[in-house]
Image (tube, rainbow, N blue to C red; front, side, top):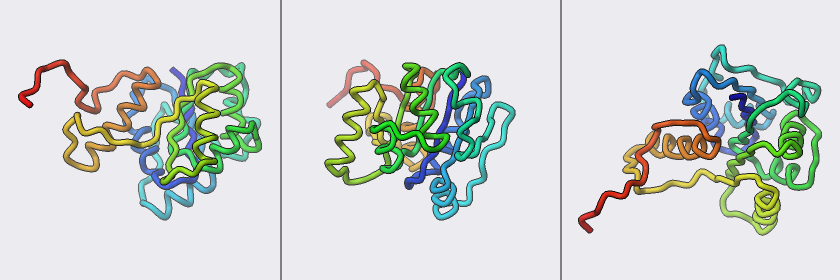
Length: 186
């Protein structure tokens, strides 16, 4: 599998790095950070960018990168986190940098796309843009917790969300306790 991971400038950039960390090594990753994402990372944490043989990093200015072509043949894309600015560009088709270009190409090629919007509360405009993208087949999956999987720590909660995003991309994982049909005593 070939997966594009786009990281835009919303709070929660560390979730993208943890997502990358949990991706199986047999999946080829093409990672692009926006300038705002780099700034968010610097402000929020000092986590270093993962370095592995299965990861290739691209500059967001490199609009001519191989991943910007439909013929390159990636399988899916995730935008984690997805800023309001990037979401708006995606919703109206602006492709002025590598991330927005790759999104436009992935959309036209009918590839699986998951976006992780990281804003709260949602404005009407933000909701309209998410709705528009959802109607185009984009999976809108904000970082929302569930309580059935027995999370006890922030790391447990993050693993749950990352596991769910991986599920949406058809990446096998065992990062969280799944819902079961076992009877409850309640």
